[in-house]
Length: 178
Image 1: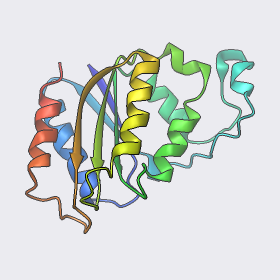
Image 2 (image 1 turned 45 degrees about the vertical axis):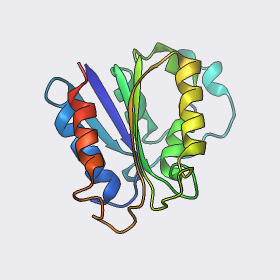
Image 3 (image 1 turned 135 degrees about the horizontal axis):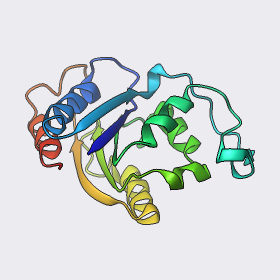
């Protein structure tokens, strides 16, 4: 299986990166895994022009690094979204990429499965609720199989996730994929 991880953290080597690394270690045993750090890309927000619906090949009118994401997803069997939680949502960088997937070309992707990795500084039990609602809506709308979620509460400082059982959970989630 070919897995693409869209990692939304703008902070290098932080808690989200550590969680993604654990997932990738497990998933790489039996799968091909590509991690795309969306904060490293130059991706402009969707303008809602809808030219993608009328252009030849359903191509977005914005020319930027999103073409790399489109190319990777066109060959993916599974998508994993990873993000720290910023004010009860995913990062702006990841949201921008997701918004740009509102194009007819997404219907041609072989993606049939999805997973979710989230890290939150808050210990409020509902800190992930709004993200989980959106995640479930995407699963339902695109008829995707939920391959798992790892949600980590109460880690704020860089590296604070070290030793957290969630790292093993992410590894096991990745290892379970075939």
